[in-house]
Length: 116
Length: 111
Image (cartoon, rainbow over all chains, first blue to last red; front, side, top):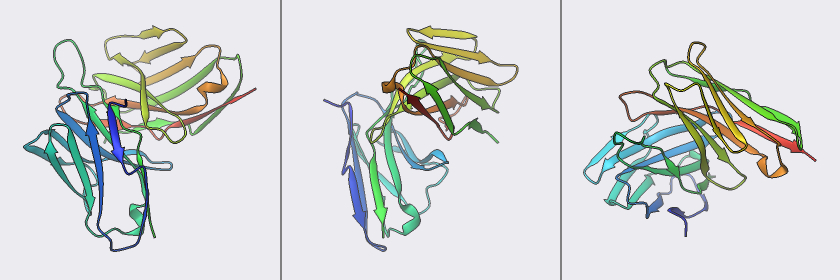
């Protein structure tokens, strides 16, 4: 079974609709992230959470909100979707770095969202 | 500001070596990563290198780091058709949560 799962994998919606993308992980990691991927732009960070009570904005948080329901679950919402939010969205997790290892990020398979 | 640059495309013949290059701007980066993205899939961690290392080898993969020039490369020996994918370089900015990703290099392996 995959360690980081995302649902749905694909979604087509209309402008103005509210959309929620969900992420679950079984890696036991404290840190979770939401990114979007656009062609030619790489990955850009939307929100990140270092634990259930710690949520922070990334570089492109406008138009998005998140909820960390549990250590293993981190949801991304688009309150009123617009066409330029059409993208591939990735969830990632990482462990708290210690003296022996870095907080390497592990990615889910992605959600392809199309806003018409 | 921080930036990571990669060329967009690379085409090689099966059995040849591939070299994917990356330049970064933040000299305080602690770790540098290579991820692979196959069609329809997420990013898969291939390897990473700590900033005090010059080279890391892992089977067919060789990572070279030139800190002076802020240049990172990934060499894939004996490239196979299954290596066709997009390869992302990323840097972990020291003292922050931030990962900065490059735009990705699409590797096409010709049979």
